[in-house]
Length: 165
Image (cartoon, helix red, strand yellow):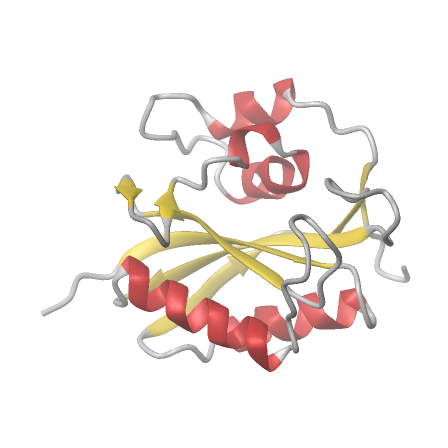
């Protein structure tokens, strides 16, 4: 019998009505097999991390409870990206939907397809700030606390969306 794990997924979009893509994806996460969405952060606008010739992103983080294995969950997240017409043209380029598995329980995973915790999350305000909303006391496997990382990272260019944005 599989065990339920609490996992955190980062969401981002900067094409074709990005707020709508993120909001729809949050709802769709709740319909993944053997998975339910527990809570989601506010939405945030952020400057693009990669090439500057692209629109700003809309980001959020969701906490899920799942019985899927890490790779099975990754497959489901990638299928959801495809349903949103995700095209991978260039690294850190524009996209309709990007879903990153940030944390999977307390596990550390090094796989050619998946690294958990997400290897770049501790340097990204658009991940850490919404993650700290949901799990400020949570620690990474190396002992660093999410709230502390969020407080230390530069959040220049990151702003919470207001309800009427």
